[in-house]
Image (cartoon, rainbow, N blue to C red):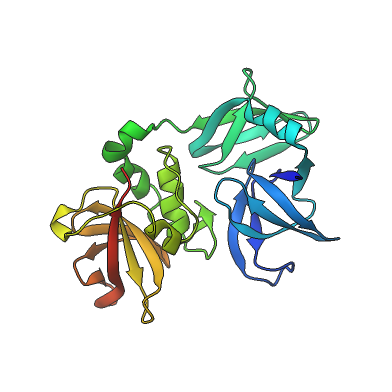
Length: 257
């Protein structure tokens, strides 16, 4: 197999091999993927962590063999914290967004494919045992982040990208899309049993799950809809006070911790 690693801060993952094609997700710096089909300008990839498929533009990654990839993964794992960070050498300075995963040497150096850059910046401080006490505070730090279809960062995020990112900070891995996330976890049967960090899922008229948000308490949800916002939720769904109507119809609530 041939592998690749993203070498830019944040790049589009497209449905088809064209700039005008839908951005189905984004690839963060350091994310690893299997190369499925390499064309003159675009490469079809499968992200190793989530099995997500799409096309990335050539020039936005470097190709690795299995030995190089394993040597990289043998490094010391870090996740970039909420304040972001920089990778720096004498000729390059690369800003990294919150949630970027890095494997560094003991000297905090990112070293792959002949490139060496020192990391300077914030490190994600959370562990899984802090999920219940810290998830609300971290999620609230994203309030008013603009909505972006396929987005996965504080520079623009979609609903499932938001839940995936926040969960990842507590070493909890979720799939990319809302309907995939809804297939995991334990069902919470009653609104009264909701706990902080539970995910609420919402469907459309055809019954397809199209939206997800993070519960802050039994009747308050934070979710990405136009922007990351806080709304009231009940057994019917999300009530948007600005619109004075329900904006999303509740389908199911899931718990993962």
